[in-house]
Image (tube, rainbow, N blue to C red; front, side, top):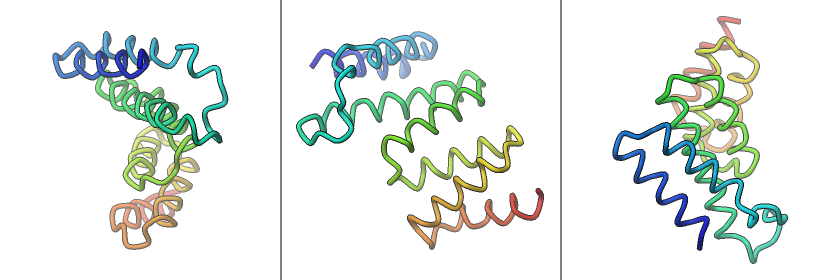
Length: 134
């Protein structure tokens, strides 16, 4: 319950335009002792795992808002490691990696997005772009 409360506080701070403070709140949430357990494979911790994923995904968004694209890519990579089922996250990871000229990361991200949804035209378009530019 404490972790969800801190997470919610981070979202509130972000909506108030206090992005740096929101980042600190989400980092505090991720430092919570609740995450010291192995939450990944245990179904009892599904909600906690989801909050962990959302904290990480939102940290990526907040870092992008703060114009720290390299850190945003790192957080997105952690998010897809935790749960790689969201094609939008793969697309965002690939797009930011492209902007940073990390073409191998971008290519892999777009390929993973297409593996999830072969009809995702944005991933397909970006994969073509990154393949023929590198």
